[in-house]
Length: 512
Length: 107
Image (cartoon, rainbow over all chains, first blue to last red; front, side, top):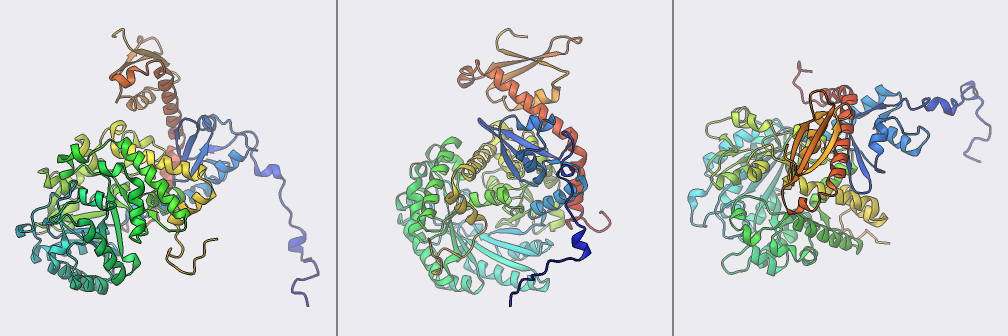
């Protein structure tokens, strides 16, 4: 017996219904209204971006034609502009409601109360990295360790944040030089956060050179994520990150292997810092990550803080050189993915999430309002609190401009109501910064007043010469170009970074 | 007004001072920029661009076209902003009012 009804539906409801004439769906002439959008001109096209970050790549002159009501209402472009809410063809209330919903989704991550709390357990370190942002101290200088009382006060301040999820990042110097402090903080935070039912993530940022069995057991039991540095093959890593014995690469790789074996494949992630030496070897660096069974890589540029400023002649480079390196490394990463090995570039993933999805990200270094102070707080070994890790690095260089208080003297409320914090808020939102306020990439980018202050002398900065601006403009443009012209396989890989499926090591995954 | 430099003329009835300044901002790395109204009665503003370095010195032939396009773009952006500022504020107010970021009583 057939499951499909053979007798047509004859109820009056269906018999009397019909579509309206086509003409009723298009307004006469060009009677559309503008909705908010920004645009950017390149050599051969314009990029239009609406208020919730959806974009269209269109021919040159399109923005002007839109404004002058020269878009043919029968054209595909008109349909695209309506569908993505660059213009409204009369359904104004619906468009506003939809845009408000999309804006809320896009900006929600940036509006959460402080989630990321960085504890600097010590300035001591056994490495002498040329680009060290911390300006570390020798391993014998215990006066640069965070004591138990300071740690407890910092936890007090952290728990005043109303955030429902807290990420506790333990770093240094080298935090594994003070294992008792790691255990104390994790134990205390777990116990006290459980009272309010908040969820927790723990991250330890370490060079892995002092990884003891006890620490690995602690990391396994508390689901700690390990973040480490791997600058590339040994000749690059050892040159960038010297230590007594010249074996920092061996120790890092051994530590990565131990973490993968004992904590699981996704328990450890690595990033690299690009130096002059790195610039010449993008392919070798990517290959090293594959060799070490890592599935994420962060192509991080040099930051203008700490030792990096003193060793600029040896480690530094121009922004254009970094961008050439980034593109070459990204090409290699895509090739690796095309060969069947899953490797995600983290900074690209952050930007692609903003470009391709309705949501934002919680990455504090690329947010508006700026993550500094709002998305992250940093508790130094001596109890001083900074708006960001970069702000603390400035302090180690002798400039405490970004210090907002001390955990011994101030509550979270005191810190966020301090005059210093109020000054930073002036340059916190790229919507109100010169250059940024008109930029089409505004929603994909962010504000970094600390970077502006460190590199250009004031928290607002000068956009035409600002390296943060130039770098992000170039990378976003490059990613857009890859999406549009890279082909189906490249697009599939880029999408997989944003919407991951099963991990690459899943044996049930079959590449066809 | 010094006699050297590239002069680009704009009719103030077509291009606002705001547009000229926003466009000029992006050229300040390589160019010294001077705004010179012809007179109180004339609607024309001359913008004088003087190269600041070797790179810009090689571009004196194209700078007028490039700057004029930048001003045109800036003017279009201002027009979009004028037409959409009200609805933008409404969208943002609606978005944040329903985002749960305001304390009760502030909504």
